[in-house]
Structures are given as C-alpha cells and as structure tokens.
Image (cartoon, rainbow, N blue to C red; front, side, top):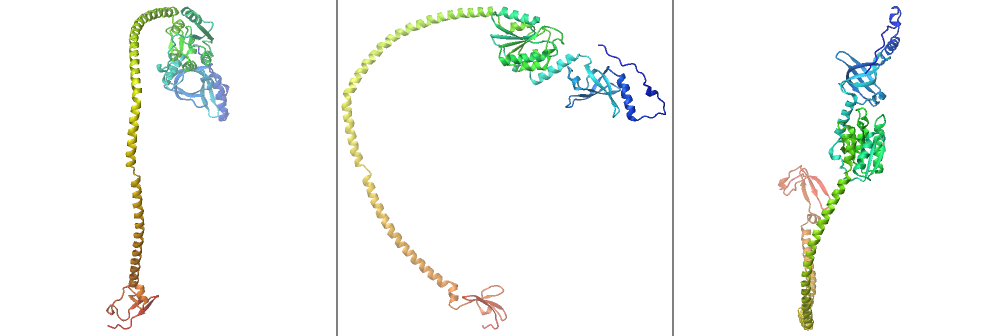
Length: 459
C-alpha cells in the first residue's frame, strides 16, 4: 500500500520575524493552524487505539498512542460508516488523515479518513466480529433451521443471471429432475449494493411464495468478491425467511456469514442443486419397486381374505340354520305367551282388588280425624287454663306492689317522719349518742331538705 509522505517542512516567514514585533494568541494560533494544516495533509499514522468514544452524533473520538506519545483523533460519521470492522480500545491500527487545529483552544488533532487494522485484514476482522455477534444472538442455532422438503415442486435461484453458478445450478436441476419449475431472481453478487439486492430478493421470494426452496449463492472468488454474502442484512434476511434456504457461495473452502445463517450449506452451487432435489430416476425406480411390492402384498392379502371369506360363508350357512331353529322356538313361545296372558291378567286384577281393600282398611283418615278432635279439646282447655293463671298472677303482683309501697321510705316520710344525716359525712343518725352540740345536720323531709345546728342533745 502506497502511503503519502508529509510535505517538506519549510519554516514560514512569520517564525523568522523580528523579535520586537508582538502578536496576539489568536494570531499565533491562526498561524500555527495554517502551517500545520498545510504541511500535514494525507499522512499515515500507526498507533494503538485508546479512550474510544462514539456519542449519539455517530462521530468517533479516540486517542492514538505509542509507548512514548499520544495524539487526539476524530473520525467523522461519513468516514466511520465506510469501516468494515469495529474499532476497539487496544487495537493496533494504521490511520490515514490530516492534522486539524482547533484555533480557539490551540489544540490539534488528526482527522481520520481511513483506518485499517494491523496484522489481520479489515475484511477478515469484520467477518469474525459479525460472525461472533450474530452467533451470540442465536441466528446460527440448529434449533431454528428448517428442514428441506422431500420433493419441492418449485425452486427459486437468487444469483447473478450471467455467472457460471446459475448455469451449473440449472444444469444439475434439469438433469436430476426434468420438468421441475425453476425461477431465477437476478441480483448483483458483488459491488456496493449487492447485499441489499440479495436481501430484498429473499424478502420478495417470501412475500410472493414463489418457491418451496431458495438457493442463494454465486461462484468462487476472493474474500472481497464474496463480501456481499458476509453482510448483516443478508444474514438477517435468510434467518427471517419462511422458505428453507440453501447457501451456495464459492468453493468448498469458502465460508461466509450466509453459510452459517442458512438452513443448509452447500460446498458449491452444483452441490446445492443436488441437495435441493432428488434424482428423478431414483425416485421413479423406488416408486416402481414399491408399486411391485404393493401389488405382491395385495395379491397375497386377497388370497388370504378369500380363504377367510369362504370359511365365513360356511359358518354363515350354519348360522342360518341356527336362526331358523330360533325362529321356530320363538313362535312356540309366542303362542304359549298369548295363551297365558288372559289368565295372568285375571290373577293380577284379583290381587289388585285385595290390596285395595287392605289399603282402605289401613287408611289413616280416621286416625287423623280423632287426633284433630283431641287437638281442638286441648286447645280450648289450654285457653281456659291460661286465663286462670293470668288472673292469679295479676292478683299476686298487686299484693306484692302493695307491700312494696308500705315499705317505701318515701311513704314513711309522707306520714311526717324525716331522716337526719351528718352534714360532713352523710351518715344517717340513729341515736343521740352519735351527735353532740354544735354539729351540723341535714334533715331530709317528704318534700325537700333542711340544714340545722344541734344546740342541745337529750339522752
């Protein structure tokens, strides 16, 4: 790879100017910017990536360093979108770009236009990174792969219409199964928009259900030639296809992301055609052999069934005689039954009359009437007894009320008596020995009360 060299360094005139002339910081930064950006244009730098940041703007900010120095760098979104690998901290890379000076802060950085990894090529690294990421998502798991149909009726080939691969596939398909419905969706298999065309063709084939099997591939080539089949959009289109997909990219030693995502990988386009459809001659011979074996089995089965049928016919004749005998026995039993029915009915009628008479004798109606009369008598007696008991109870209650009234203290007070209590303690005074002159008493009368002072106590 030819790498541009920096321009020959020539000191600008302002560096050699007279010491007596003073300039501002802005003027100095402007002159440094002009000098550096004019000299360090289209340069290549080999370094290690560190402090890698990719904000929402899509630009990539990083630091390039070696054992003794470091350089700030930036890769704008349009340049980063052209990378075929994902830069990471610690990765050794070679960058191509130009020095840019941010004049307000007096800082300079390398604006990267192109980046390549040291050692392994960028395409190989991009291949490994995408393979590991899709494998971690489960896109290559065997559980999600679909089986190929035993005998597809329609096969769709997605490849270049002018390449050798499509001719090999069509030749093998028509040789193995003449008359098979084959359709070709022409796409570009290398170039800038090839991956998008292949993914769109897979989606269109599913949207219109054009086939039972899809063959996606191309002939051999370099890793760069086969790169369209290493793009993420192709892998995801294969994974979401409801139609089984056979990947047929390159030669047997070539592996692409499409091979891992497909339901089946074929080492070559011709092998893909052989995997897609079985040999018609083999199928015809198998069907013929199965038909002959079926005919032999049917003939043998018919002989066995015929013998069984003859044996059953003999048993059927014997069964017919048994049925005739049974019919005669049934006729005799029917006649005997008709003869016995009138006598049997008469006996049953006599028994029914006897049971009715017994039932009338044992009828509970008379007992119910007697019990009703007894219940009426008891009800009348209960009413009389309740009246007498209530009268006696009322008389007893009135007597008790009279005795209670006689014992009521209020009635005693009404007859002129009173109750004397100590005014301080409220204790009832029952004897003159319980009080002394000068003590205060409260006298409770029939109506109201009065406070008094004892002047003299008489024993």
